[in-house]
Image (cartoon, rainbow, N blue to C red; front, side, top):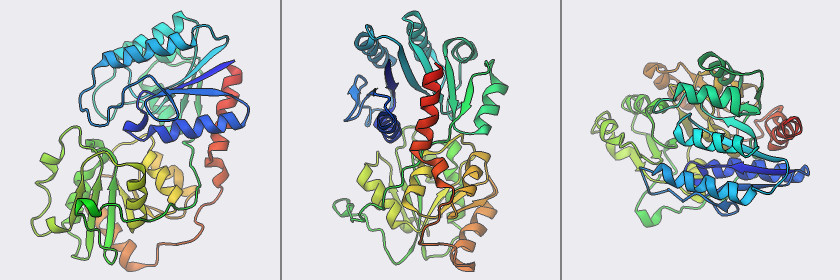
Length: 358
């Protein structure tokens, strides 16, 4: 049996962590596999697009060709494919894979894209005909998928795995950029690529109503140039306490930012699963998230997650102040429960079962 993990995003959006953890845990269970992606540790068939805003789809087509070339003579060829939208490049991959007899387990991260649109006929083809098994990360995603598209009875819910390493070393690595994140202040962190669905505008509006002891750090790429619009939201008096890192954030920088923050804020207006949320759980840091169903899923596992009414700026302001001023919310201790259900071992065992069924 040949098992491959196809990750066209890789280190562009932190998917390298997901693919590596899944791959390593499957290996530990006796399911040898290879990753085809763009990062160290994978077979690099896709270009590294960290500093590129527009990506020519031909780059992906060439990557697909290389994958099929390297796996063409393998028996029982099973490929686990990360899919984020249903477009023409995905159609080409699935059509070719089906023609070659490849069996596909599709991990559908976003049943509905957070930007752009899906091609309905492509989505129906991939979900109904081309995928042997389909994985989503929660019941909400499953419901959206079956509501929007024509699916077979082959959808499986497997929660996003969480790594539980010890907290990484807290080192000030931004000194060479002249960025000062005061340790004595209340540090809010917004982390991840800037997209309208992620609700940064709500957080910026809320920031205007917070007192001078608060700093807000925004860290992530702005491929859509949203900051040109968002920058107008912030009051001039609050601008000195706004720290922007609008670029790709490396792993050690991410560790520093999460460790330095007092509260990670996820003001998402729409989300199907959040890699940022699972990463912050790994560090044991407190999270304030909008009360969307995919976020609420984690309240049964993580005691340091708090919620506010989605898209409600006033409730966001109240929730931030409540966290810092009205109670001793932050528990700097073991705050996870039933956590084995979220481990990569638990997730990988479920993937292993699907591989056996495929």
